[in-house]
Amino acid sequence: MDAGPVWASARFPMRSATKASIYRHEVTQAAAETVLLAVERFAGGSFVPQRPACSQWQALMKQAQRAIDWQCDDTATVLRKIRAADGFPGVADALFGQPCHVFDAWPETQLRGAPGELLARRETALLRATRDGAVWIGHVKRPGSIKLPATLAFAAEARSLPQTPWPDWWRAKAATWQDIFYEEAASVGYLHFEFYNGAMSTQQCQRLRSALAWAKQRPTQVLVLMGGLDFWSNGIHLNVIEAASLSGGSAADESWYNITAMNDLALELITTDRQITVAAVGGNTGAGGCFLALAADRVWLREAVMLNPHYKNMGNLYGSEYWTYLLPRRVGADAARTIMQQRQALAAQQAQHAGLADDCLPGDVSGFRRKVISYASKLAVSLDIKAQLTIKNEARSTHETAKPLAQYRQEEMAQMQRNFYGFDPSYHVARHHFVHKSPASWTPRHLCVHRDLHWSPP
View 1 (tube, helix red, strand yellow):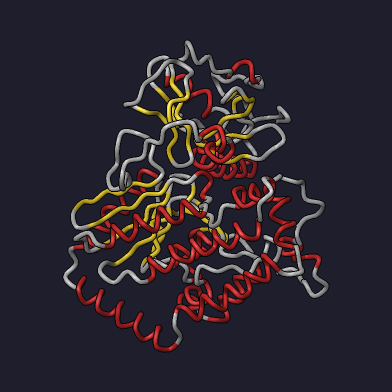
View 2 (cartoon, rainbow, N blue to C red):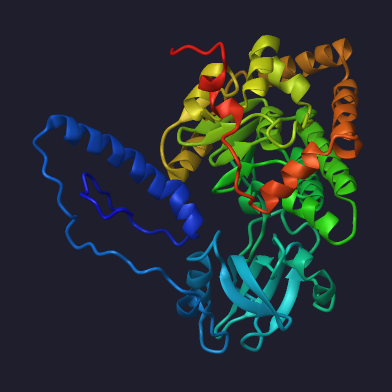
């Protein structure tokens, strides 16, 4: 901050959420509103900047101020401390006697133990007892390493802990941490998947596919994929892939496994024949996550989300998730080629105008979800819902006859094989720099179109 004159300010109620989530929603919205207000006031010429009432600069919070006392802190305090440092820098702590920074904390309402004791593991998270309960720790960063799912970062140590998942534990929302859960009301199914930063590892894709396959058998007319609060999906999990190379494994192999699992998930969605499917994109989405959304019959966007429907920035990655079928189907071959080559972020309104989405709905996340429920409920009882399903299935059959989905997948995966295993290491280099947050040496050319010799002002 330069501590200069304040031309506009805004206040908002603070949610119980991570620092990063507050920035992505309330702060972003307030920033957009205050920039416009500041420009208006400056143009008016009569406004005198003043310091907002009841305001003061807050000192930088140090690790000592957010350190967790596992013997004395209650669950609410532990959650506040971790969320205040998430996604950066995390809270300095120790697990299994090893130093690390912890992130991605969620409350547990049933399991208990001695304060500070590690109690259990579930999928990607570790459970640690507090003074009055317990919290799930989903991600950690060990010294000299990268941020990873907690059970992967401490894979050897975590094996000594009991596993707590029960069979098909995502079939209903429970009072515990769940990264996948299903809800149902008024002939509509809602499949939620809250994956940290929207990244989907091989195992997460496989679990979500299992949940989707089960949800498809429910007696519903509409099936809505809700995604998560901050992100709908960002495709394959680059940190988990990088971890494979750091632990002596093969990043190329893990990349292949991950994109195969993503493709299986997309195929499960494309071939849904008993429901109208909806991707309700309330959080940002990028790369393979964008094309997973396009695998649904309808795409509804919250007006504040951003989409990055391309792959090439990751070392010329070709991409899969049936994008060569899904994108031209919506926007046409020429527009699809332009979108993939330009590599530009799209605001929700731009995406709808381009044909990537069917509706753009106003409101914050809570308001968006209320509208999604209202729209989906009306769709489920519409008089022509059976006709819509018939038309959809006939179109899918026609497309399959013209060119099978297996052929699209085979062609895409041939390109991906070159990215993962070929002589050009660009993807692996780009992934390494992305995961390790290496500073860019220059602004990418696709963001600096004015450097093109043939560029002229619009």
